[in-house]
Image (tube, rainbow, N blue to C red):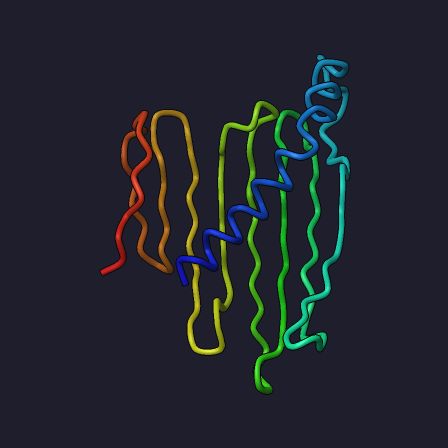
Length: 147
């Protein structure tokens, strides 16, 4: 499961990093945004295969909304008759500082995930299903271990 999460994060981050130059140019050009509207920067679709057979698909969108960039990803495949949907959203500032990440759905036929991280002024908010933890913002990154 950790490998799947690392792969998902790598895909989301690579999708964010790829259009970095375009985002930076747009932010520099639009010093004063006239209206708060989301602009679609990129979207795409991947077909998922197993043993050379299509089993599902992943779609993604990269949007710029003011000074924030948001990447959304929807992933769904069918494993032995069971749908395995997974959605993730990553939001960052135009200089790629993380603001929020949320992931929800199934990581396999038998396991689910529902977690979120939100970086706010002076604090970080973590959500694992219904459990919420808020703490003051640190300069180091801590990755909690599952118990």
